[in-house]
Length: 56
Image (tube, rainbow, N blue to C red):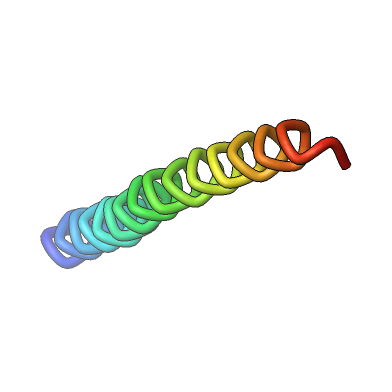
């Protein structure tokens, strides 16, 4: 009975550990993706503005 309870506790602990690692990775991936997206949008806006001023 005690081993069963300990086994369940270990499984729950492992599940939370894995979920925590996944959410931490997804948080950083979201931040990096947002930075890349904003950088690409800014680059595109600057590039299109410079093309428009050149008459092309």
